[in-house]
Image 1 (tube, rainbow over the protein chains, first blue to last red):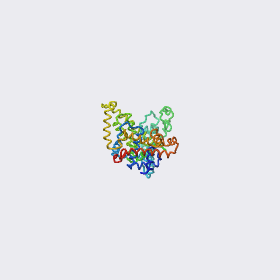
Image 2 (image 1 turned 60 degrees about the vertical axis):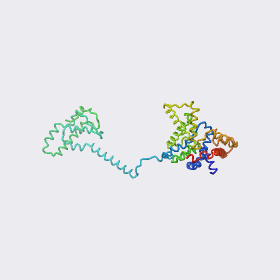
Image 3 (image 1 turned 90 degrees about the horizontal axis):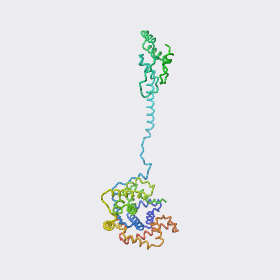
Image 4 (image 1 turned 120 degrees about the horizontal axis):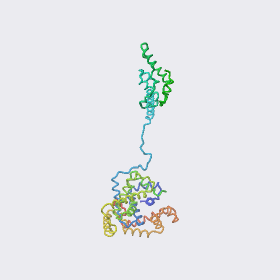
Length: 220
Length: 204
């Protein structure tokens, strides 16, 4: 064994060898049994000089530890490459624009459905029979436009203003023989619109407060 | 230079799956660790068992060691905790070990047991009186500059740079002196034990 190598080993034992040399020597030390033997003797000499004697040190300790460790799997090197090796959720690049389009389409579809559901005009056209219950439902919807996602039964307001008057009822009955169903429906709708425009509850408000005043104003 | 650079290079090798590098660390620190554990348990056999457990715990925990502290500092903490736990569990057990009473008979018993085990490896005899005498004689026989360098290093724990300042010489000279002192002592030890301390076929 050459003297330079032994000198390096001595310096390495004292943690005084430059890092680059340490890397090479550590590799050799872990495999070279002669070098390990010398390393062990350096440790023994050091312990003796420091008077770490006085006890009976059975140096089978290193052999026993080695036997246990030999039966174990080698440790993994996560500590050497800490952050970069962390597993990440991998989403294919090609999937990202498709996902964006799909998201935009679903939002658009939801918006269309909600708008159609909320629009009062088709409902009015379809619920022609001029019953009190139907008109109350329609008015209630127009007063609560914000309820988009869920339906709640609106308060029943004591209003007479949106109930077709006797005059209108008589008119419809009188002309029903001569008018088509579509015309009757249009007439009724127009009347109801005029009623709500002059005497109905303010659109968008939830406060049922002005019924009496509205009644006084409404043309009967 | 980092004070722990050589230990760290061995640690990195262990973390890369090289078990032989951990063997080198065990050989380097086994004496220190047993001495440390002996503060808690005065039975040498028990101290060895605890030191063994501490080394194995350290090996298993090495993937989490990042080198923020010195390896021995980290190992030291593991050994202290292992020793404390061992003392607690021993105190709970009904078996008592009377260290004072054991000073003669039990020590002798352990001595015999130890010598039987020692026959398996010459390194096991390292701290017997004979070895201590040999080492002391070898140190006394050293030239003054070598003796001063090795004593400042081993007994006073000075770095090469501090020794260089104290001895008014370059760091390279200190390194050379310490190496030559170790070689001289090792030569005497190998003469005593013929096959050589730490002989590989015995350690394997």
